Image 1 (cartoon, rainbow, N blue to C red):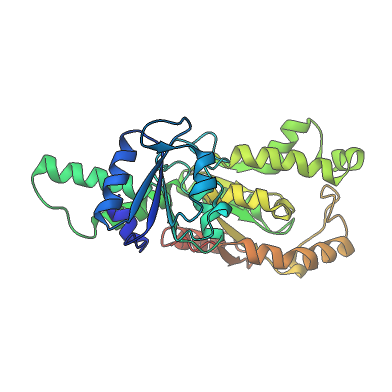
Image 2: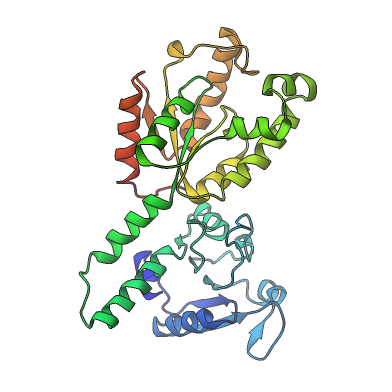
Length: 323
């Protein structure tokens, strides 16, 4: 845990620290916080007990908490959309550490990062523990770069490759190609939606309207977002709801397939882009959204192999800079 804290440059000196949970990891977290100079450490539990405070008491009496360390399973797969606390309640918050490592970025961590607060989930700590066990078992010191190298490698393998972009930009074709090359499963959210609604998307749009379709889409995306190590092609409008983007980022890197408008052909099976006029309107409405929520933009020239090579190169040399 010390290595995880130092990696994120979180200063504990003189700070008030809240440790969520009362299990074995919480004891380690409290000891580490004190060793790094924390002025006080508060242990938080669902039930009031000696030496702990409840979550209600944390909000009421300790809103000046500087650092939060989560050692509970809240936010862990498969219930990845939950956070043990509301970071908005802590105006002085300057750091968040979450022991949960699945998903790669928990909601607690994502919420903190969205406010510019240094935060990290538990994968780095998990790798560090494995290396320390190796050192003890082998009675030798590991290379100083081993922790970072293994962490980056494991993270890249576990992160989903998520393709976003305009209808007709090549998400399905490019997604299938990169999934095949990397030996990953490929998931098309539109196909999964059609399984759910048991009809064509264009027919569902016409009968129930866009809002109802977006509700189904969000439900499907939140389930798919729980997976790791897969390639996901999203529908053109998936990024219109921030909750979809947030869910997909928890285990994934978002690549915007930026194909020039003149190379995109409208088709009747795409309800919001069935004509040239509709396509232009959607392009103008969404281009800025694609750009702002993407972690990386991939310029699509029309050659599938070029796009696949770009994504592969970016993904396996990628350092998460979201939020």
